[in-house]
Length: 597
Image (cartoon, rainbow, N blue to C red; front, side, top):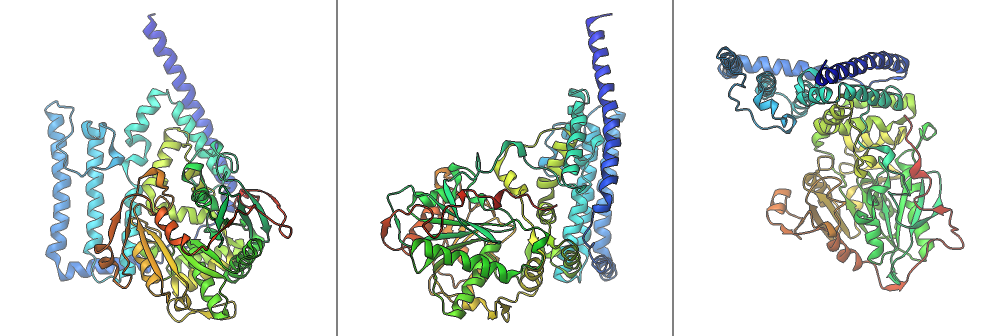
């Protein structure tokens, strides 16, 4: 027996061993799913009227313009059959080659075999044609209301993405090559990854996006030196240690979103907005929100405003012996900072000297990509969830955001982890993305029903804290930073609400990139620029057309704006005082709490 024969025998033995292991793990997988099945709860499916209306609209289009619909159908049939004939002809002539391929490029199909191998190329071309046929059928459905059309487009695209041949073991060349190369070990590791994710999430399939073992809060993430100087049931208040001999007189308090955790602004030293602000000579405070459990079911927007925003502002004033603060609100905290400013106006309280908003929505008249999730059928399901659980659990929100970019945040990572057996990357941003927080039941209901659906803040006003609050009550100097490609808080939607405030001093900035990268954009990177235009009375398109593009980060521009509203220089302040003894080192305890599953 030759050396090659021995090697082949050993390889076959290893392959059979791994395939046996796959069978064992498959049995364990079934057991895990069965064990957790009673705990699983799904939100409502889309109302069937969405699909009934779509079918009726399509039939109506056929009746009114049968030639156009038939033309599109014939085009699809012709292309599909022609491709099949071309592929057959190549094989009949003894050529193991792919048929001519004019389909558009798609990074899911980057493996050369998708272009050169007749089997994989045939699958790819047929998939691309089917996908386009589905999109065309949606476009042909006339007479749909705008919201129904948006929902139909979203759900049909989900079907298209889900059925891609890359998502199945037998039709993904990357997966098959890896399985052969590793003698089946990649399949074993993939199943182990799948089972681990299911077990970690009580049977819910949530794909891990990062290597969670690579990071530890306070050790290599969220490391800017500071102290916890105040704590209540809603938040911990962190005050950061100064790095300059003098600081601006007016303190800066940052309110991050409580859907996620504050350290998105303090991932690492090189891109920490917190550290950068400290280095510019500001006394920086940040709120680290509690990660609520079921006991917070009755906590509402009023509690976040009174026991969160207003209490934090009050404590910062005491700590710095100042009558005013400059405040920052990011995302949902920016929305709530607007509400807080309106309430302060009603009460005649001038505690906030200026306010900065990062990607903050206030006018929800156009719900954008979230339209499919902000209709009654879905929110009815969320109401049932919070009634049962006491809170809107973080994995539901995480899943919702992920399916807005399903190929990047669901299928792509699942292929690498579950089918190719790869360990998720050690990426701090993705680690933060997976470290979410739940929302108290009452607060989630108010936010979704009254703000997102009812748009009460910009319509007739929203009743909170004993007052009717309206966006026109926001009158302090404002700076709003938005992001050009943000799909969560689109810059035009942020701008529309920003215009409705009654501040006499408004600065609006559009950063390049998206919801996170556009904000976490340190000057040292010299990566993304920004747009500015002083005329905020223009409509959004005219504003952008007349805007000046500036190379580099918006941070220095904001520093210039903020410093002019931050008073004289005073001796640097160390964290805490006699009335606010240091409770513990930053980043504190609340940020380390894992969300309720």
